[in-house]
Length: 483
Image (cartoon, rainbow, N blue to C red; front, side, top):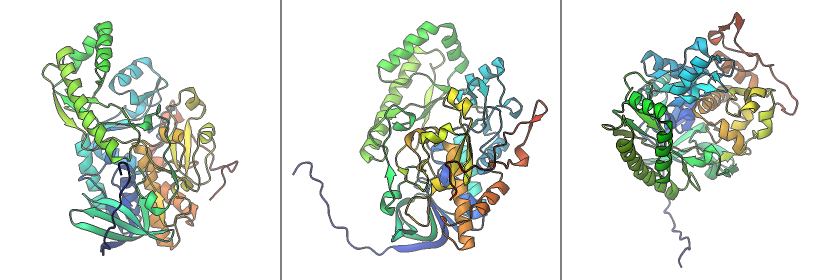
């Protein structure tokens, strides 16, 4: 019968155990990098499973090579730890750029104009904020170095298919690869898949509702165009604004992508980036993923041909790279022991179990009133599931919170907290839910993670003779109960 879903029995299989470990992390994107490195550095025997042949996820394969929202409006760095170490390693290789530290927080119009022209991610509410633009290829190499130095056992080209469950307790992961179907047994499982791919089989509750008008409802298929005379194109835009507007409207009517961003990286002055968005009904539906992948490449060609024909500076350009992996922004969001909601964005009070402090930069004047958002450890704990943590954009949140705080550095921070917690729980012989939070807080502080009442000494700086660090209270309990 047409439309009827058919099923077939799958024969019983015996799955070989490839390895036993303390912590298994599924997903080698930003969250997985933070989780695996933190767990291994804290003494846990750690396995990392990644479906692609590289690490970094959206920051490398997705060509989302902008690490934003690292400082608050005052210019104080709030996301540090492993994320900042990653950036510093790239800086040493001349593989990233960011506004100089001494101008973070500046509202000087000339400086803001200069940096806004290079990346609008570096300017918020007419203030310069810390955001890093990175080299995707060098970043893959740097992340390899970091996981290898930490002693992480990594399986690339391996898809984490499902968690192994003993009742409501996670006991490992089954993964698929060209070597067949294998299992990793572990004491703690960390879902860093981005889309919460382990949640359905684990029996965890989650939400998938997303307003179609917000950022996370869209997929992306990014690409780079090389051999562009950017200054010629930019001069045309500035001296012929009416014609520029006409051309951008025309390409939009044709279904193409208006606008582009300069690379800014050393020796990449002739490369521009295009980061389009595609509306979709689901980011976990393989038919939708296939549709956007194919549509994206079709429109990429249309856009490039239009630019070559109509925009001075693009005459001799060519498409040099399209994203090896489709850009996903939002799917499942776990129901955690605590769910972050829009009401939390109206509070300036930390949680007692805060594991990360995020600059709140993207909500206009509301951000000026509430410049920091605090993330509780409980939002990483799937309600009713033991021995599992969620360290990616699938953290427990409503769609508004998720829309603002599921970017690359946020996920690294989730991962660092989750990996540290997993290692400490194994060391202490307790579940991740029963872990003494003070021990987790203390360890995160030693890892240079800014937390309420404890700012890393190495990142303190002076601003007009005053310490440029917003010191929040240690914690409050009004409506934000402890674990």
